[in-house]
Image 1 (cartoon, rainbow, N blue to C red):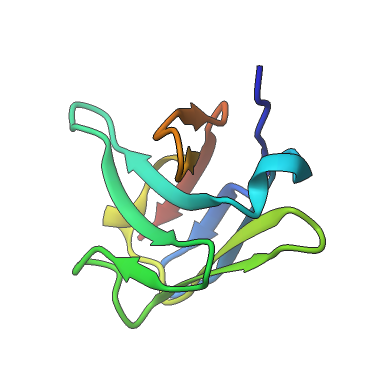
Image 2 (image 1 turned 180 degrees about the vertical axis):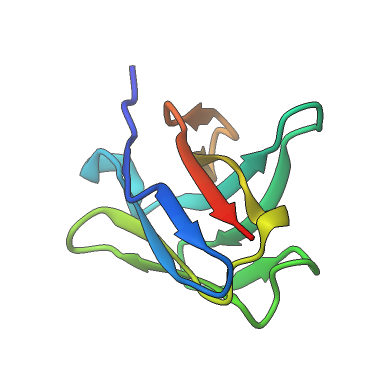
Length: 117
């Protein structure tokens, strides 16, 4: 079983910043696309940002220019730097690992981000 360990959520005021981290097993991290999804109460889970094994990134329109996803292959960790946070960014954020070759998906336990107005 692949375990993803997330950290960095919390409570922040609007306009503030948070950085989420997700550590993954090293043996498959380098061959995987990593993503951050989020789910607000009563809403479907949606992709916030993703980064491929070669560093290509993709962002939801709602976070472009405010969020930055990055990965450190040596530390087997993916980050999500969130700036200029808005109340509508409040959600549980989930780390996702997709193994490119097999398309297997793995999820972290989720970390709560709450942005107060």
